[in-house]
Length: 147
Image (cartoon, rainbow, N blue to C red):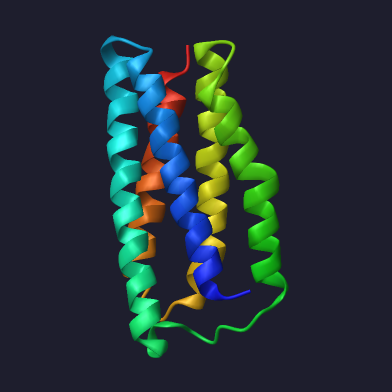
């Protein structure tokens, strides 16, 4: 496994998040439509940030802080596959709006965990720290929207 594999997972998280939040925006009105539209837009922006990180890793080996295939990399891959992606899938087809919000809250929390563990591999943590801060804001916005 290479660091690029984990970055591809991050790209998929953001892509799936964009799809989920776009669908929820289409299915709602008012403040919830605005919230989900905003979240979808942010997820698209996160994709672009991870693409920049990916390009940096491809061109600058010094951007990676002591990458080695280790247990943490395997854990992160498994964590995404077993926790994040199933929740994103379920949030795409919720039984109720509150179910969608609850699943989105869980996805945001899990994404924060994933990105915090991923950032240890980078010497320049600025971009990934920005993504983490935005994910935390998403989490707060979703918590505030619960009915």
